[in-house]
Length: 228
Image (cartoon, rainbow, N blue to C red; front, side, top):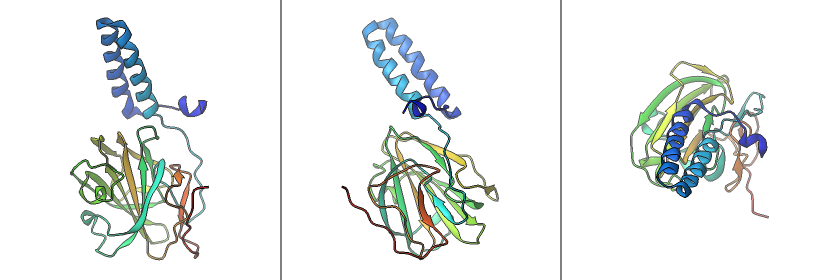
């Protein structure tokens, strides 16, 4: 817990931390007791933009969670139309990040970025199914070193108003590398190739860069889970 609080801060967070700190000083000046509310919000902002190191499994074929959060949905769905993935439905794993999760996103599997497409949209609660279709999003199509293709999508949430994505088309990328973040509270969808079993269950917490959500090299039934 201490290490997570003392993690490095993502560079995208420093302007916001500075704004919160300035507002806090102003609140102390206007009325001292209210200033402590600003202190709490500033500390939350620091915590929100933390960027801890992760231990990423490196075996070929593993698909790793791109986001911290809860596996919200696992269902068949068509990838976003702007990345020309076709209309076939693929298994979509949706991971929801609340405002207390790490929001730095990581590459789910190594390969080459073949397409990056941004689409403006609405700001429904990211935990809703319709968020995949109507919300602001940044979609990425990737070809793995094995020649398979996957897609992953950053989706803005109810209070998120900015998606940052640092990757470009034709870029070679490794599993677990940082590729962007979303402010503040959001979701990341991963579309898996056909017949790839899902190795996480709905309700399970995933850790970006560490939790294995699928394995392209195995044939087994998708896993299910229950609260105990």
